[in-house]
Image (cartoon, rainbow, N blue to C red; front, side, top):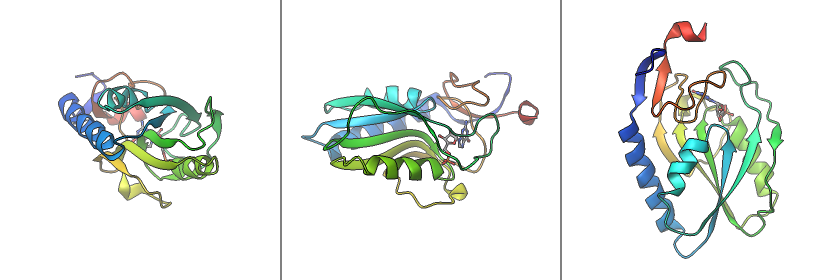
Length: 178
Ligand code: 5GP
């Protein structure tokens, strides 16, 4: 275990099993179609890489980067597009792939923004969901795990850009946040 980690919330094995299940479910539900997965950088990168390798239908990728927490652990509420999609999504079956849904502000903004570009369908897949923290209503279609209201890192999620490469989801020791 990394010396800064207080506890592992979700192990590598637990994540692997759940991501396999999500990939299978998506492959079944979109049988006969092609999908475009939109990864939200940088947090969703590791999850997306594992998820798409468990999807058996034709799958295309694109990426967006949006501003989120900056250097702290509290959402500012402001969402800004730092990198937009490379191509049009009109008429495509789109799945937004996120690392975590917290207040829901980021996804509310993203779904409204992407819906206006006329996809054939638009769904949301997130590795983690913190339902207790929701301040706006967003319809999340695929959830890896519901987690309690604790700040987590690893498997793509960072604290000040660190810990993204941890292969599990963890809570850091309190002194690290100070
Ligand atoms: P929301 O807009 O739903 O409040 O926040 C979404 C974004 O906040 C996520 O994509 C992620 O970047 C960040 N976030 C929310 N909760 C956590 C957390 O527990 N750990 C980390 N590392 N980021 C979080």
